[in-house]
Image (cartoon, rainbow, N blue to C red; front, top):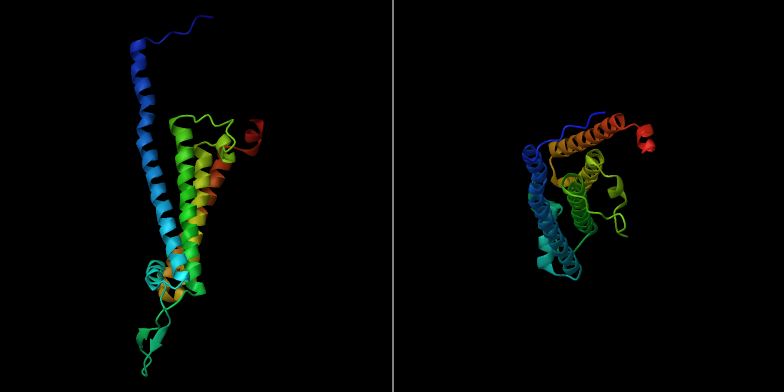
Length: 212
């Protein structure tokens, strides 16, 4: 058998350059880490406002009401028209639920960022060599572009579910068209995730995965 033809060193420069270009993604992942820090800060700001409002701080309560989109019960005049809204002087169950859902939303988006940062870096930039690390995520051991897409789609469905639940809890302050369109969009996300998972199953059958 003849020896394989060796590629001259000069012809390897372009492939090496193209392969090294993957490091251009590094600033993108560092930027996502910065976005993660902003979400952490926002989480604690909302949590502090919630605690302050629970102890009667009216400024914190007003901030929570505005950020959650909550609207007090309407006051109707003799002709049946809305002439104002009841004053909100204390936390109620609906406000607390909306704020807590907003906090959960931040956590889920933060989890999504972690999956993109860690999984994307491991898949497209460089190996992290975390095999012996006690805190290695279980999913990272078999992550690839296909698995990452399915997990991201699932995370987006969870985030969309939280937004839809917030809208339904505060449905009185939304137009009927908004409720319908949010439900339709959530359903589209669900169908998209199912399509991605089905395509992944077709390209990587169970028997093939088991062989590995």
